[in-house]
Image (cartoon, rainbow, N blue to C red; front, side, top):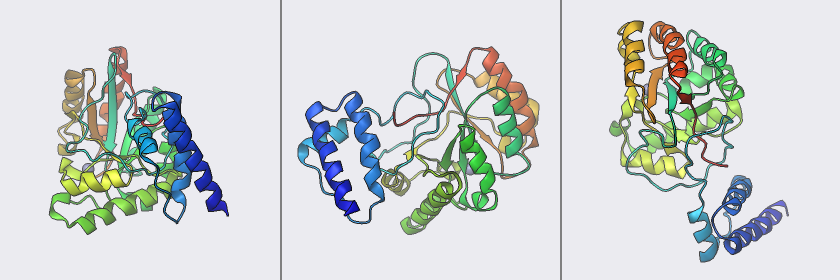
Length: 279
Ligand SMILES: [Zn+2]
């Protein structure tokens, strides 16, 4: 009975969206509503060609990266990309900060403290096996407005795995992120930046866009905090996505460096943003 209700409602919304056209509010409303039905066990009715057109044309899919709130979660199939997103678009001096491989109790809280001090949001690409140990840190990320992304369960080189193994790495991680913060991730980053077709296809199927980076701080090489600071400050530019790590080794240099380069970026007029896919 409940399911029938959902389906009827969905059909109505799809029909309404088709009539109104794809742009503007129709796309946004449709996105929000159609997601409600994705949890049902039975297959959803196939929308007619007009409705499909409306879905396809929705403008919410990858908006310029603005806004502070965490995106509303709901897996929905996306277009399969051939390359990951490397930088952000949008006007002005916008940059994005990303932290990979965590959470880690020795470093992640310090990074979160610094971000909170300057009222800045970032993306955290977490590994499932770390989330299993420190779920509360992932909950804190989400509570404080950061975007939590999927970085696989064990951080393998995906290009050496079978599709089934890649699926398991990604799916389990999305599951535990949802457990930790109540929402499934909408972003995926391949370990080592090693993408393959399966990763793009599976990510799209799971409702995740592939996000890479522009500027590697090389903090994973532990080159000294000064080198990290210099890399970020000299590499800063509009659209740049910065890669740092809050786990996977001794990240005290990362923790110290961000206390220097973050206020520098803000003083230089950069707006540090997180992506918002759905409006
Ligand atoms: Zn990584």
